[in-house]
Image (tube, rainbow, N blue to C red; front, side):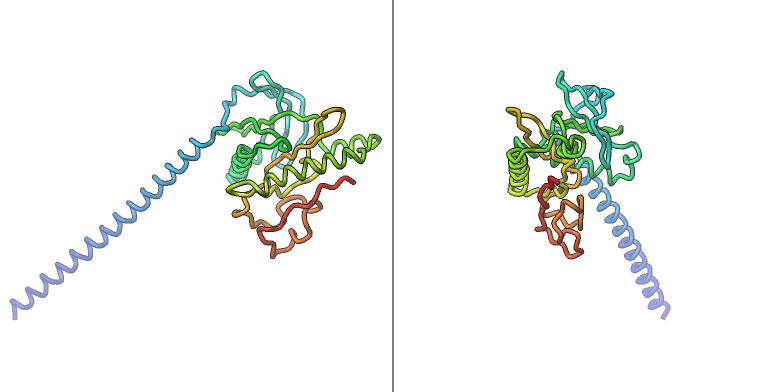
Length: 250
């Protein structure tokens, strides 16, 4: 009887030891998975940084006092980069946090760096340090909105309306047919159609990728300017195939 009780105690002790070992192994497994996840995240971040060839040093950008305009996320100033006159977009200080806005700004830069077309505003580069981000592009003469509202006494001719419309259509066609991932601009407004002169005629370039996204990631209802969007873009049942509205000239 005593021997049997001793055996039972030994078994109980063995079970207790095994349970403790299992708990220790589970805890070690949790820690290993956490370390693995953190390492994978850092590796992914490093790979992303390697691919970001658009990053330029802040000291290489000179911001002049001339302000060209402002938007929802920041101001646009005239500046100098590598001896050339450029446009420099600076994020509002109050929009640096939460991190969503910085992530949104980085997404805009990632998309802009992939786009190369004569009817899209030329992206030059951007900073990506701890200070207010700077976004550098070519400098244009005006915007469609400025031309329509600031100079109503100089209406666009029929030929200029057709030319500007075709330039915008070419830009959107390039984005929508881009391989391997089509891009939806989602905010084609008169403010985002920038103008320059060629042979005494206005030509257009589409700018601002702040609300743009890749087709497979696009599910946001009414992401851009409502009056320039398709009517179904405001519906809660919007699908990823909803497109942009056309540019409005009046």
